[in-house]
Amino acid sequence: MADINCLLRRIPKVDEVLRTPGIEGLTGVYPRDMVVEAVRKTLDEIRQDIIEGCLGEGEPDGWTDPDVVRDRVVSAVERMARPNLRRVINATGVVLHTNLGRAVLCPAAIEAVHMAASGYSNLELDLETGKRGSRYAPVEGILARLTGAESSLVVNNNAAAVLLALNTLARGREVIVSRGQLVEIGGSFRVPEVMEQSGAILREVGSTNKTYPDDYRRAVNERTALLLHVHTSNYRIVGFTRETRVEELASLGRETGIPVMCDLGSGSLLAMEQLGLPHEPTVQQTVAAGADVVTFSGDKLLGGPQAGIILGRKDLLDRMKKNPLTRALRIDKMTVAALEATLREYLDLKSAVQNIPALRMIGAGRENLRDRAGALSLLLKEAAGDRAEISMEREHSAVGGGALPIADLPGWLVAVKPAALTVEELAARLRKGNPAVMGRIMDGRLCFDVRTLLKDEEIILAGAFATALGRE
View 1 (tube, rainbow, N blue to C red):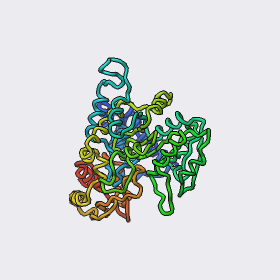
View 2: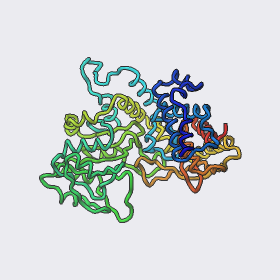
View 3: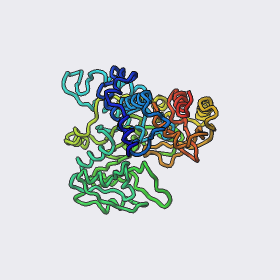
View 4: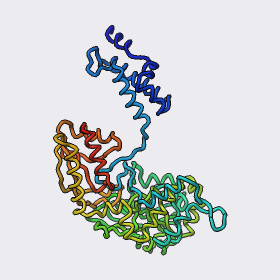
């Protein structure tokens, strides 16, 4: 105990550390309170290490050396000053990575967000009349032109879109849905739970693998408010199956006078076959099939900002716009700007495929990916020297974001096996770097998939890799 007390007494005071050369000048760069907090945190860590027996008189790191304390304080200040939301280089191969923010915005959308954020805009002003306007006006005309829908409304995500539609059209009444479509939409939230919060009453029909139009017809009664079709965009049931199509539900809806709502989930304005992928119903096809209300996400296959887009019959959408929930769920000016710019890209589908990063990544060809992987491999070999083995190999990427679950995207990746570090240690160093780098661990190696790398990120990744290995 005497030795511990001796060591504790040697810990410098906060004021002494603040006067140390190299720390004294930090208060001219960072807020003084932040520097003081960093000093106290560093001294507390040293104190705790001594109490727990992690440090001793002959400790080789020389914790009592002012230079050592200074370096720890500087590191602490830099960590505290670093933004919590930071840039990440996505080398996982998952295009719509939920944990990494899903779709990357196209250049036009980024420019539009900058415009909206850096000055005033006519968000709710009609410049022609000088009177109050609607914040949805910038996208309503484009959505009508692209999809053929009578009316539209945008809220902050697709779950909110479903909630608003059900609350408006079916509160206190029954909504008929196939048992095989009661999906979990992510974050442990499920369709039955969203429906419960909306005030609608769930009426399940059919079985997990087979549901027929007659199942819906037999369930219709005087309390039925909606026929709901949920597109299983994040999983597939294959084999002995039968799903009631939107066209069949629309026919039943016309027969019974009950509106049909379709939750597309991911939602796409582009036929995925054009990118060499399995068929996915487009928004346009769903509207044309007779759905009275269609909902889908903005930041998945559309490639835009997070948003929940609602399309459909004008009378039904007008009711939703009057619901007080609409104000609680409304989008902000940056989302309006980014969504309008993204939708404008779809006025020319060739332009959309080239300019929208999500579509460009999904549609990238294997030869192009092999060339990029070869270039990255050379950069990483130069960065690693003899501290890691670098190899190239074929592998598959994923669309992600709950979209196209059975679509494997063939491509190439670069695999790294460090010599002196474990793969987990290397991954952690890259993850904690600036910028952070995320790959995926496979077969005892850290792999970088070039499909999801943006322009010039190969060079940045190589620099971060060298730093993680302890090389200049």
